Length: 327
Ligand code: FES
Ligand SMILES: [Fe+2]
Image (tube, rainbow, N blue to C red; front, side, top):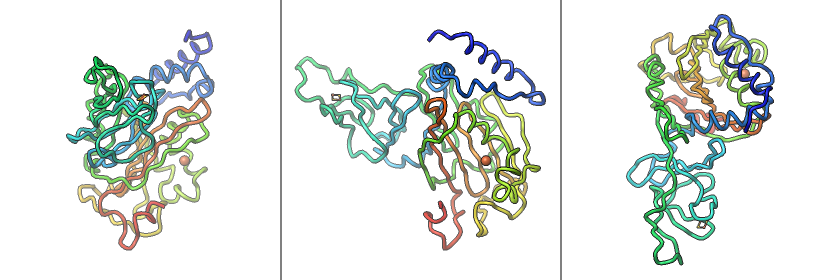
């Protein structure tokens, strides 16, 4: 795509904003939220090259556990193979490009294409292809594999074979919040939905507490007021903010939730930590739960949201079922 003058101006304006110090920060230019040209650039240069969160590692507890997802324009399978390795691979059959798997589930042995029944093992290697000519070499066919990393229990996939690793970029974030033991939180709830806004609006909204005293005046504000929001300087790969919580108060439930994470200081028990791992994984962590969204554009006016809640072990109050707690 040949960028036109408008897109050039939008990008220059975004770059100029990014160069400002936090104290002088400006809003994103409005055209950035509605430009179809910018969306194409985002898909080519962000979602095809950066780390996208696809869920939590405990969603793939046994060999054969899989789920499918679009990453940018590419259909992807995330799968635990027979040897226990978590993999990401193309969800497109190498024969005539049929989609191999839908949704999520547990595979017994391998992947069977619904079109002509080519079969792949859990490592993505073609192992069965009926009626093919004698000199057809199955060993030469494998589903393209993508980079995958796990950070604090979240699983990230990158379509770019030359991507720089994710974990080293997040070391400072990991050590700052090591007491939270984020890798210990267990999946409680997961959903994938289309919401009606541009993906960047949602990412930015998640990362500010300024609107709490207005938009959430009766829900979040009494427990986590705007005046206790504290924007912090993030790192190269993330932004960061902390939200104070009035001790003992929670907007999420009426029952007193036990705090089982004994490593947390009193200060850590009474705040939410919110970070955005670029480009589009936004997370809120408190002592007893995480709440996070992984965002991808769905056109300029909609966003595909994979979102979840995870709980620290033992944090569901006695007498409440997992299902009711999730509600
Ligand atoms: S498209 Fe998959 S076997 Fe033909
Ligand atoms: Fe909000």
